[in-house]
Length: 356
Ligand code: ATP
Image 1 (tube, rainbow, N blue to C red):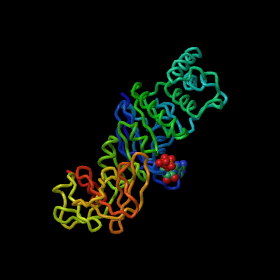
Image 2 (cartoon, protein in one colour):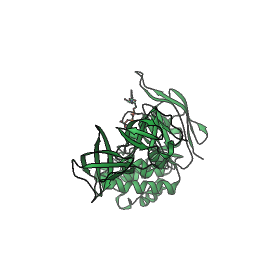
Image 3 (cartoon, rainbow, N blue to C red):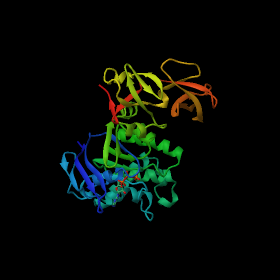
Image 4 (cartoon, rainbow, N blue to C red):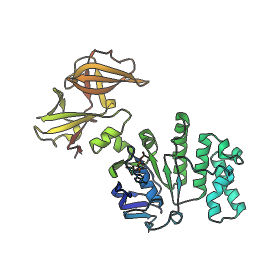
């Protein structure tokens, strides 16, 4: 078993930056776990502290039931892939892949055999004699992965390993990496600032902000039911509409329009209280004809998303976005009606999700 447990993990850098603030997190054995958050939130610090490349200021790192907080990186039985792959330019692919085995004093013939095996698995068999400078970005990335796989560590740590790839290779690498992790079943922590990547690949994910974890869940949970307005605003290719509102009986008043209370908040609201009404543009219906309980406004922006359009309505001075299928997009200045789906809209009180 190689679950990763973090208990009250804290990291304060010299100079006083608190990059991790008493984090608790358990990543079960075999899970593919993504760490997501804006620049500077502490993702890399968390990964490096798990790896032992940074010393924790407080708390504990437990891997496979063993407290490794005071253990050197080499003694933690984990393998890490960095953003720049950290390949040795003067070594060929075989030696790069076999390097960790050389450090472990594995015999040359065994290491070469292992490197050939893993290299073949990653489609590198024809490139084994080349040096990193003679490889494309995608090939270098596969060498870095092969090196990690050859070590047979208890856990893999990836720090934005796909960030140097172009968009198409990146998509391919995503699918490939996910499949590989699944086959190997090795507990993996993956840092990314690309939420599409986290949503697509992770079994579960954590969204971080300023050294804190703001939500842990499956990609579907985090997308459908963000626990707070920070996560709601951060996750999603187009940010969630977060609209100030006031509860009026069994409706919510937003920008002088009356909306039905979302199903998830039914019976949980107090008359007259101030809330934030959240609905993703994808769950905001759009009509050119008047509809009861909708947000009425004038179309101020129409953006092409490919197969659909992102329409911004000016609702009494408040911008409200809806995704409209291609062929139904309105013209600028048209009157439009946005009708949030009651089963998908959410209510936030003091920034936290209201839910039974
Ligand atoms: P990014 O997505 O930009 O890589 P991140 O989420 O990985 O960011 P970290 O690199 O972990 O963030 O940094 C967290 C905080 O710690 C930031 O405020 C950063 O400036 C600070 N920090 C990181 N490394 C050091 C260091 N060696 N000394 C002092 N402060 C540091």
